[in-house]
Image 1: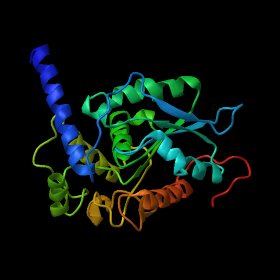
Image 2 (image 1 turned 45 degrees about the vertical axis):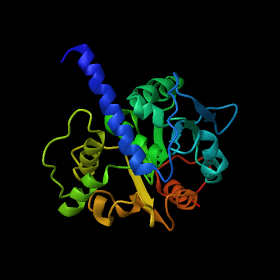
Image 3 (image 1 turned 120 degrees about the vertical axis):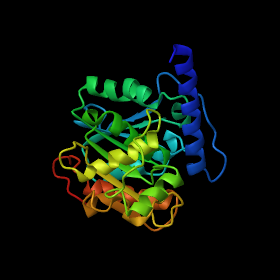
Image 4 (image 1 turned 180 degrees about the vertical axis):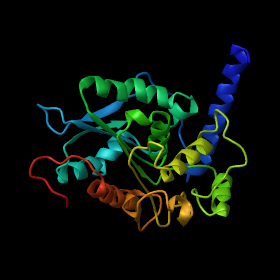
Length: 265
């Protein structure tokens, strides 16, 4: 394939992904912003005069911005539990996925600079689109991620999830064909399936959906692949209340470092 044809194929694949995401995530129309270089992010260190050993990179949903995550208390919950971690809320909006540059920009603008600054551990977290992004980045760069918390993540189009459901869950699902190079959602499902194989390295994963979430996949999706303590749920739909409840549970369960003298809530 010549370079021009490859460029066209990339644009078409990015557009197809954006449409799939919009169809899966929208309760109303989604605004697609232009991706900025570098990706913007809110830096929220635990202490003004010292760097924590761990960084939590949080990504908002498709209709949220980083300031919403702070306003809704997600960073406060980290602090209330005495977790010894700095927080960065990255503005990884839909435009980065639409443009096919999400992994590149998050890596070059957020993850690699964090490692260069001396962070020994990097956890990814996100809600909705942000949860999808956290999983997708961990699949692409598993050696750069020490853990993932995915709250109400978009995972795949309904037709793909239906095929998994008919097979009885990811543990027993066998796709009719391997995913193509731009079939990110199908590749993500296969990657999640690998959590059932101890020989395949995966970062610790905590994942869940609200009990009435429109994006909630069927119950047995991750059955047999993750320990029950890694599976999150809370009453409610695709909204702040269940997201915040699951975030609190994930912070209590995840092996994140605690400051001296701090215990689990």
